[in-house]
Length: 260
Image (tube, rainbow, N blue to C red; front, side, top):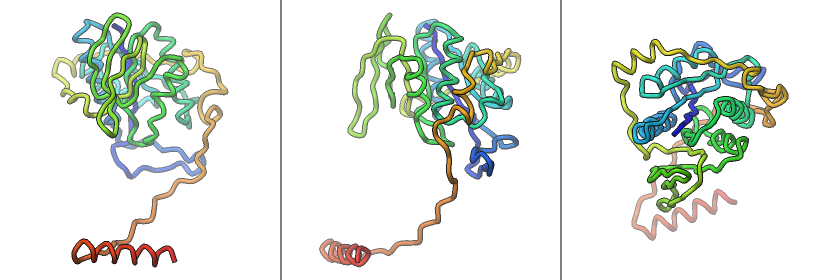
């Protein structure tokens, strides 16, 4: 079984700087980590590999510094790592990012399962995983909390919902986005860290993956960030006291006064 994990390196701090010209995050010089949800994707891929004697390839799109995230993934049990990096990718929105990653996945070749974290902590859009499945024209199941059974041509999973979960069976190949309830990521072993330090990271440019220039970076991004700002902190509210009926009456009066 061939498994691909798509990860992203994100700023460790919430105090990020914005490029005033492009309205994109300034990542250079900022301490970064693997997106927390992607850690669960890595762990689940390694568990599937251990059950099926398969192979796990991790891939990320980002600047050269994202190589450290790939090495961390290798230390957790991933077999191969690919960094898709090119200045032409700068400013990509979720559509351009998912297109770029899908081009890289096509270059990798045959695969059975793609696993992504449900969303990135710096964007919270949850769009890249589904976007990859769209570009590759394969099924997707989002918010996966458990992979129940993998057969030769199908896989059955539990998909988390607000009311509980759905059981979904889908043909392979397929893309999953996973939630933190799916597992507990392992700590890297000493052997894994040594292997990660010596591992060769494959680097691919836009030309290597045959990405169309008009579909990547700012030029290939159909969405534009018009303005970025920090919301004004909310002022403190008030505590209503009394029995239930008194509180309800006071609350209704407050709401009416706000409307009027």
